[in-house]
Image (cartoon, helix red, strand yellow):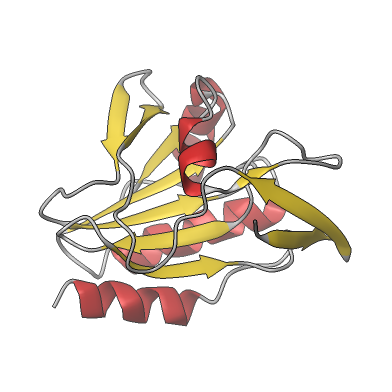
Length: 170
């Protein structure tokens, strides 16, 4: 199982590790309006699944704003930012920050995304929430790119993610 760090301290992740080449498991998350959204699986469009600890932290907020802006330049891509935040908090965040080009969703009901993608933090002060990981899923439902951000408190490599999205969407 993968390990990341939180302020330099190792933290184990739990669940089924999903890697490049694997079929992206189809799971259900909860959108800000409390509707259910299925992510993963073959959807006929490129999906970007962005796992973050909480939109209520500066790094996650910045990451979500940057992806919201970047994906507006790439048509036909379905982007979902997934956290354990309650849908009400996510809705307030999206409204306040003007997030309109991607979906913010929660894995709070079943922790299905965290478990099936292997991104659930297993120990330490953040146990039970999601690590900072990004999956790009091709139109056929296969994972074509994965980035585990090694230090939870740091931002991902945006350029690498966007390059993978453009390549998958070509």
